[in-house]
Amino acid sequence: MSFFRDKVVIVTGGSDGIGKALIGALIEAGAKVATCGRHYEKLYALQLEYSQVMLHTMVCDVSHEEECKRFILSTVETFGTIDILINNAGISMRSLFDDADTNVIRQLMDVNFMGAVYCTKAALPYILQQKGTIAGISSAAGYRGLPGRSGYSASKFALQGWLEALRTELRDTGVHVMWVSPGFTASNIRNTALNSHGVGQGESPLDESKLMSAETCAKYILNAIEKRKRVLVLTFTGKLTVFLNKFFPSLADKLVHRYYFKNGELVR
Picture 1 (cartoon, rainbow, N blue to C red):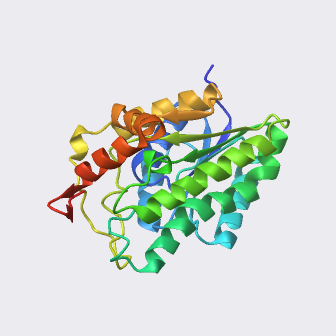
Picture 2 (cartoon, rainbow, N blue to C red):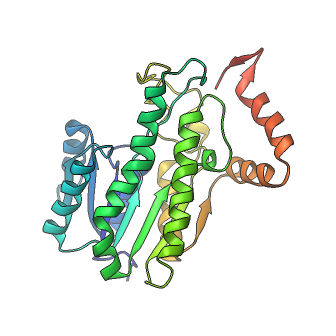
C-alpha cells in the first residue's frame, strides 16, 4: 500500500510546475489533496483534469495571512485533518539589486517566506496531532546567493533557517520537518520571475527542455518525505553549487559570476 494513501496533503501553489506534478503523483498514490493558487482559471483547469477524484482547491494569495487561514480551515472542513504540508508556492526575480525597486524584494519575502510561515502556523495544530510532515520547497539559492536574484536568495535563506529552527523545536513531537532544493528543474517560475519593477518577465533565460522534469522532481520529493529525510538537494548542478559554496566559497564566487554575467551584463 502506498505511504500516501488516504493521507491529507496540502500543496501550495499547485497550478504549475513542481506543485502540479506533486498533485498528480499524490493523487495517483491515493492521497487526499488540497491546493491553492492565485489564478482561478488555472485551478479550474486542474479540477477538470482530476474530475474523477476529490481535489480541494481554493483561490489564495499566500502573502496574505487571512487567506492562508481560510485555505487551511477549508481543507480541514473538507478532509477532517492535515497530515502533510508542502510549502511550494513561490516566485522568483531577475534584476540586479541596483536596478530593482525594494518592493520587489518585499514581494519575494512575502510570498516565498511569509507564505510558508502563514500556512504552517495555521496547519500546525493538525500536523502535530497527526505527527505529520512540514516540507518547504527551497532552492540552491537558499545555500548560495545568486546575482540577479538577491530577493529570491534572501527568501530561500530565510525559509531554510526558519525550517531548521522549526525542525529543532519540534524534535520531540514526532513531526518531520524538511526542505528541498530542486536545482534547475523545468518550471514556470522563471517565466513569471519579476523584473526590476515587479512585472512578470514572461520568458525563461534557460532551455527548459534540458532541465529535470517537474514530474521527476516530484517523485524525488515524495520519496524524501516518505523516508523522512532532513534535506534533499537535486540535480548535479544543484549539488555542485552547494558543495563548492561550502568548501570553496571564493571559487564559487568566480564560477557563479562567470555563469551569470557576460561582458559585465547579466545574461541569466
